[in-house]
Length: 460
Image 1 (cartoon, one colour):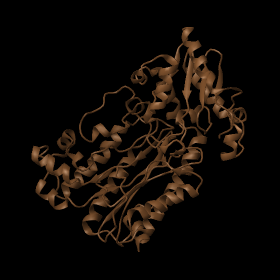
Image 2: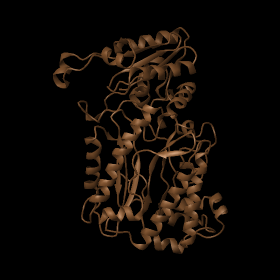
Image 3: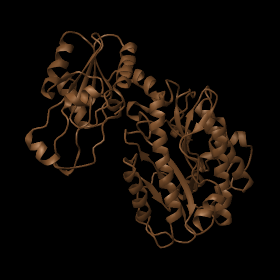
Image 4: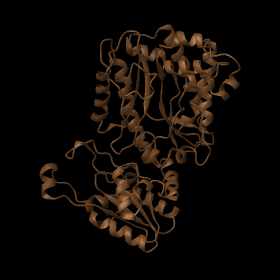
């Protein structure tokens, strides 16, 4: 945990943003995989971690906005728990480390919440992303379970986003730790990949490094020779000479902050001529995006800085044609770049996505429905203290090529005959994490191998 004054400060800032009533924060419970005692690895709710700091299951917290007090609800360990889990500090002892001096049994939570509701006091809660928490809210507040998300407090959502979006120095320190471990994960993968290995062997080593550093992975690892599938979690393929391997993996720091990096490298000792051409184009798009990072710049502009470089480069390679401005307006570049340039990063790899991506990334602005642009998770103006990923990619997706050809979509800007000759290239992505500063941006963590020369030196 951070020092208790940090949690006191966070809760104090939240209390100042809201007026009257209660804030109800539900921690997560254990989630069984296939029977009650065999659970997925526990991960606490990120907003609960942010304000309370207690990383254990079956807890809830109530912040009384009128009294300026906080109470943690949870049950102490019995001797049966201790036999299996060992002796642990009491909830009261743990709560005091987060600046909370009121603790109550979990069975008292419903009565406390109902009493406030009956008295006409607002009970604010966040949209539940786990069904069991939707059920708990439904029981406590008499809300139909399928209405709990829409009955969540938009005022609270906005207040939490406003706080969590701006990373304090102690958070940046944790994000640096996560990024540094993530670089070690990627460097190891670039060194070890060889023809004949399984994707799973590389993924296993990457995840070992995250655990050995005292944390875990911050999201399910993507490690694949089929990088054209953007979120490919299958690890069953065998690497072969001539393949490209795409790794998207990050470590979580001991206090729960996420790293998120991507690398692409040849399975053989070097890139072939086509791979090199597209790799260097992707790298140029990455640098164009990084160069645009600054306070006051809409991340939508960062996205289009990368998209323009990709479109211009594809035109030089003969895969695109026509006027680039018109092509970008029509979204023709999404043939190669069908996703967004990046997203917020913090206690979540997609930071605060559970609170609503449009609230986090658009702040009320309309969102495009165009392929590629609709997947831009962060479009709003950047602010000092934001931490964002930069990850433009170039993907040759055979099914998308065939679909757009059949529909005649963007035919004025795409050379489908030439696209067919490149359709087996796969996908290329590089990604690093950046803190927006008062006058620009800086990368978090050490530099990872990025250039062709740096990667091929490790592949030799």
